[in-house]
Length: 131
Image (cartoon, rainbow, N blue to C red; front, side):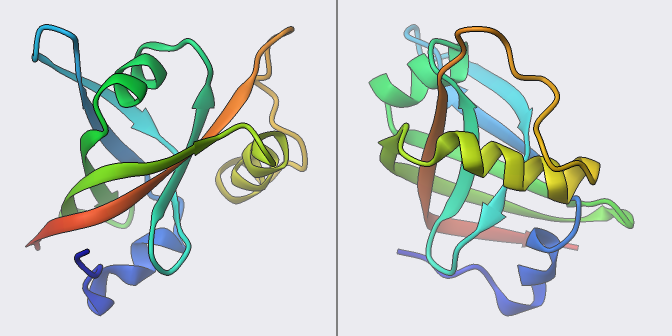
C-alpha cells in the first residue's frame, strides 16, 4: 500500500473533485468526476449501484484517480489504486456526509427513487505527485 504524500492530504479536506478512471469490459478507460474523502488508509467514494463505474469496479478493481486542488488547478495528485471494499452498509449516510462537504447541505439532493447507494474503498498502490 502506498501512502498519500503528507503535503497533499489537504486536498481531501477541500471540495476537491477526483477524476476516477475505471476499465470497461473491452479494456478502454472510463472517467467520472466523483466526490471523495480519505480515511487515513483508503480513498472513499460513493456511487449508485448499476452505474457504469459501479459495474466496472465490481468486475475489475484496478482504478486511478486524479485529485485536483480547487484553489490551484496546476496542483494535483494522481493515484493508482485497487478497490478493496464495496458495501451498501452506511452508504446513504455517507452520501449525505459528502453532500455536506461539497454542497453545504444536510441531505444529498440528487437521490433517485429506488437508488441503492454504494461505498467503495480504494487502497492507494502508487501515487504520482504533480505540482
